[in-house]
Image 1: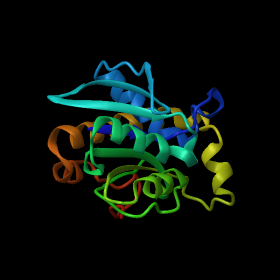
Image 2: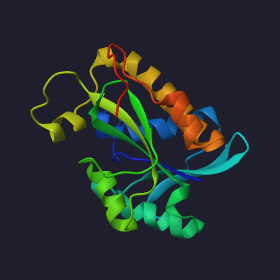
Image 3: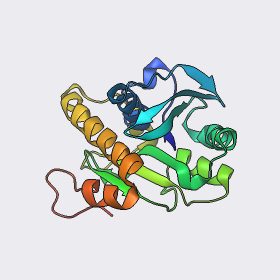
Length: 195
């Protein structure tokens, strides 16, 4: 399986909402002793095992809006179809600290996912969406997703990354249906499950 975290390369972007995909892949790598040390198809990659499954973890280095080029190249190199792809990304439509597994769907305005859909010519690949909406109106979404996390969010961020990596590992080892049942959850403080 190919597990791709979306984000932007460069130290200025590391702890921003738009880099939750990168941060989650880093956490999966850490939890499963996988080294992200090779450069292939314009991505930083590492191969290893999650449970009994072989995975390739990847962080495209193309910048967010061109992620599809790298993802398509990796799928072709691995000779995998989109059904063996999991994309992990931030989602401004979901509340902060929530996560949602989806087996397919539109990009929902996320430019990195839009580019993957454009390059693959299809939408039927798995996504793990991580909520970043702060709970108040966001005037400038582009500015918000690239602004550093506030210091008070760092502890919550650690919990979100643990939950996200556990959800991704569940998808890899148990399949999407079981993972959805176990991990699709509402954000703390909300009383409905996210769409």
